[in-house]
Image (cartoon, rainbow, N blue to C red; front, top):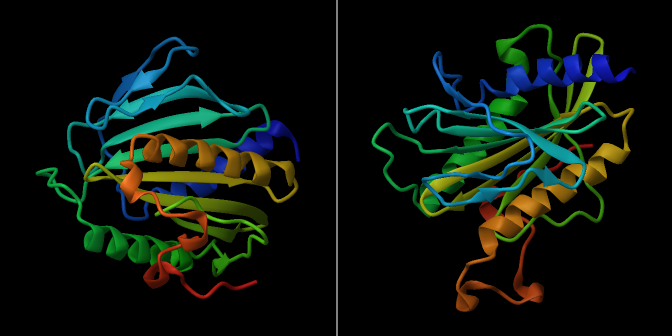
Length: 223
């Protein structure tokens, strides 16, 4: 598959996944800044560097409605897009609580699995296993197999709660580009490190005590 075709396929899957939980805003501000300039999100003070592993930051979209929130897009030379969403669950931007976060994770996972009910061209979506993979601390992570017509894509979802905001990473790529799985996880780990770097020491659990996903958020994995 050529790079341009991979970009189109990834875009098609991304368009479908944008329908899950966070609607697409009709009007958004696009920040056109130098490609090698870091972006600082004013709500969370998270700093998104120009380069993360193979991915380069290419665009930032921000909407005044906090439910639409901010989207930071990265791309790499393989045509893989990595989107980071920072958003709230209501227009008043009330801080998201842990129970709301857990509910949102389950709803987002369910919505992705039910994509075929919204679009007849999409086959039933499946969870796929990630042998040896351990999700970052306190995050929800799931990988999917999505077939849109004759095109099959892998998509990885990562969700975390940070300072009352939801932070979602979505990366989709062709299974023909197996190296992209490693790069996708390196990107997710980099974002997770940003979220965890200033966490008080007492909140950091010993490695043996960690779980890859909160028990309530660990849907049965399908192959």
